Length: 121
Image 1: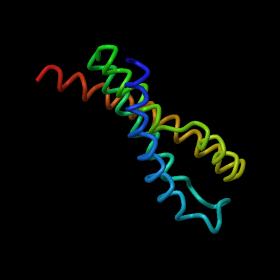
Image 2: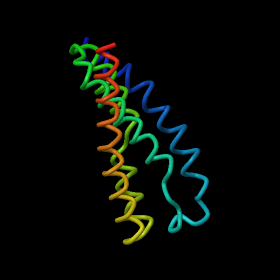
Image 3: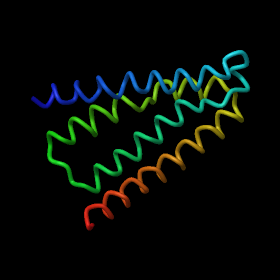
């Protein structure tokens, strides 16, 4: 049952990532070395926020498999992030990686705080 829930969550998260990241990242395609991968950054931040929210809500195993592992795992991407860090060059890549990490942790913290606040309401 858990594997099915993960697959169902990923079946929503992965196409959503493709649509958002592909559309936004494609905007800078003629000059990839000057391009800031906005789409990948956006989906990774959204996934971090949702996962932080899930952590605060103490979801049961099935809900966490569906949303946390499936949806967030399908929505976020490390492989595209790593390739893009390399493709934009040394300085831009370092800046993009640093911004992604700092904002990703902040998004997860914000999701956690929001999840806790809604749990008390």
